[in-house]
Image 1 (spheres, helix red, strand yellow):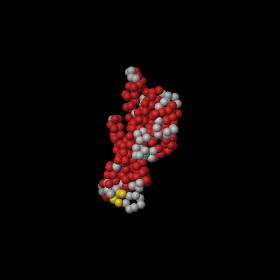
Image 2: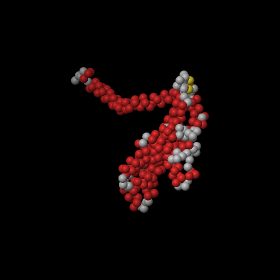
Image 3: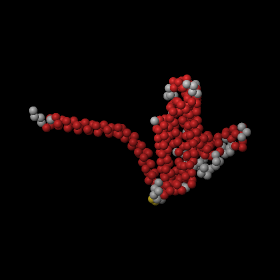
Image 4: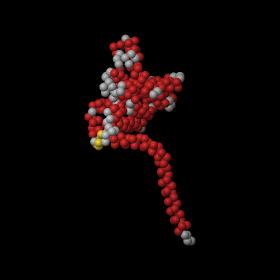
Length: 311
C-alpha cells in the first residue's frame, strides 16, 4: 500500500516531533516570562543605579566640573583614609547592638513567653513590635531628648545616687556610639522576639512533655528542643538586623551627624557627607559599592552557616 509523502507515518512522526519539541521549548520559557516584569522593575531601580554607582566610583567628579577618570584611586583612598575606614569599624560595632544583643534578649524573652503561655499575647506582640512601625525620625528625636543633659536618663541616674555617671551621652566621644547602638537594640529587639515566637509556636508541645518526663529542666529544654527548632528564624533575624546595622543612616543623621568628631560616622552617612557636603561623588560611590559588597558578603556567610546548621 503506497502512502503519499505528506501522509506517510514518517512525515506525521516528524511533524509531531517538531510540534512536541516546540511546545517543550515554549514550556521552558514560560517561567521566565512570568518573572520578566518583576526582573525588569528590579533592574531599572536596583541593578542600573548600582551599575552607575560602580561607574562613578572610577571617576573624580563634583557634579559640576567634567569627570576625570582615576581608575581605582577612590578605592585606594577608602583604604588609606582613617575616617573612612573608621566608619566601617563603627558599622561592625553597631552589629553588636543591632543584631547580637537583640538576638540574645529576644531568645530569652521569647523562650519565657513560649513556656509560660502569658495571657494577652496578642497585645504584648503588638506593643513589643511597636518600635518597628514608628518612623525612625520620631525615635531619634525622642531618644535624643532622653540622652540630653537634662533628660530622663540623667534624671534617673541622679535619683539612684549615680549623678557622677550623668553626661551628654550623644556628645561624649566614648559613649556616643554605644548610645546610638542602644537605640538600635530597642528598635530591633521587638522584631527578633516576634520572629522567634512564631518559630517556637510551631514546635510540637509533646516534645516538651517528653523532655519533662525525662527530667529535663527549662534550660535543658531550651538548648535541646527550642534552640535547634528556631535556627531558620535566627538566620532570618540576623540577616534583617545585620543589614539594618550596616545601612543605618537616618538614626545617625538625626542624633549625632557623625559626631562628636567622627566617632559615630558610618558608611551610609559617609556616602551622604562625601557626595552632598564635600562634592566628592567618586569617593561616595566607592563607599556605596564597598558597602553593597560587604552587606552581600555578610548575608552570604549567615545563610551558609544557617544551611549547614540545619542539615
